[in-house]
Amino acid sequence: MALGCPFWIFGLLSIRMVGSTRKGFMVLRRGWVLSLAWVMIFASGVSGVRAAERVVPTSNAELQLSYAPLVRRTAPAVVNIYARKVVRRTFRSPLFNHPFFRRFFGDVLPPGARRERIENSLGSGVIVRPDGYIVTNNHVISGADEVIVALADRREFDADVVLTDERTDLAVLRIETEGTSLPHLELMDSDDIEVGDIILAIGNPFGVGQTVTSGIVSALARTQVGVADYRYFIQTDAAINPGNSGGAMVGLDGRLAGVNTAIFSKSGGSIGIGFAVPANMVRVVVESALRGGRVVRPWLGATGQGVTADIAAAQGLDRPSGVLVNAVYPKGPADRAGIKVGDIIKAIGQHKVLDPEGLEFRIATHPLDSNVELTVLRGERTLKTEVALGPPPEVPQRDLTWIEGRGPLAGARVGNLSPAFAEELGFDPMRRGVVVVEVATNSPARNLGLKPGDVLVRINGKEIELVEDVLVATNEEASNWRIAIKRGDRQLNVMVRR
Image 1 (cartoon, rainbow, N blue to C red):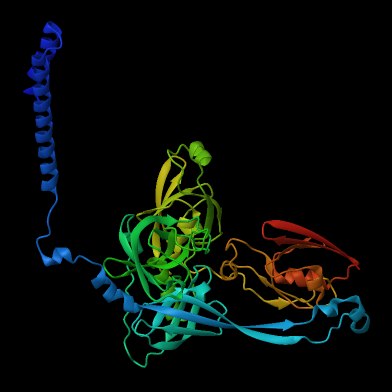
Image 2: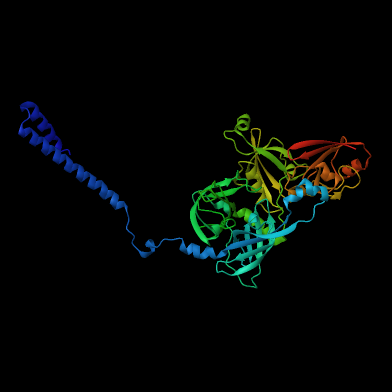
């Protein structure tokens, strides 16, 4: 192009000096041709450099890069689960609600026809031990009368439900293999997973048969997915669809990274937002099943709220993260370790704590009777303290008792709340008082509208702390009853006149 420039300039000057002469246009055209030639040479040089960056495969191995060896090793440990439930319903003709029939039968209607139908649900599961222990989602087998496990080699087994845990949406099954060792997946440390890692999802979507999809870890510690009490999920863009529930999320090392549990979708199909329970939580549930079939989690004895932007500004923090402690159980693990109301828990061990869900997950995945180091911000000081975790205590004893007599609470079964009993019921372990566990049909308590989960606060002005307080209050003669009940976040005040 540089050599063409003089010809351009000389041609333009020739035209300007002598007018539109043939010589001037010839010189101008020659400059254009040379300029175009230099552009083509330069472009070919650039394309040559780019071509040099592309590498031609040099061996058959480079041509055959594939997930196939990983799938061959892991897919046999993923099973299909078929859960069957018999639903019994009583059918009665709507004519019996007509006033004409009411005239003859009153409220005592003739018995209706009983009908039964079979409901089937489909899911996936993961063999985690060679002797036949299988992990799946609780919602896959919930309420099932029969559970059948189909292996990848098409063998089928009746399965026993060893443990169900609604709070994590996990369940453990067992099949009898008569001494035959089954292919299984080892559990990885899910804290080693990073965003961007490649994973495989294996399951039985829509019942089409075992299917493998690939993707990456899109996010970690998703705590706002409301499908379980312990909300701390691995997010992936690997295709997960109905039927994949309970299937395996597998890392490239062939170990179980998580159990696929839920998807975010408005259509019912995968849009690239799937969630899995991390392997560290799966390990807790499996170990509980091996110990005897009941999940007992470590207990911190403190609760709090997430640090918002306003709280962070008030505390002089540069960012909103951590858990602001707002309640400490007396003589609990946190109390014994010196944790106080107003402290901000920033980390457990080497893991940062961003919100209450993350704190709950970190505590729940530690072994019982273990020690953990908490990093706490108290005012302007950063403290480290060791907490000895343990199971939640049953103090006071639950003392389950049926209320009798002629009072409005007769027919209710009540018990003392303790951290252990509250955890068992799915309540806040910090809550104390007397809880309604059961209500008999056709009883005064049922007519009053009492429900399981209600907490009795006051009876005729007397504060209720223990079951014996309820018995004393209900044994007294009264023409009117004033009862205060805590139901969820609401307090109900009921007046009963006799």
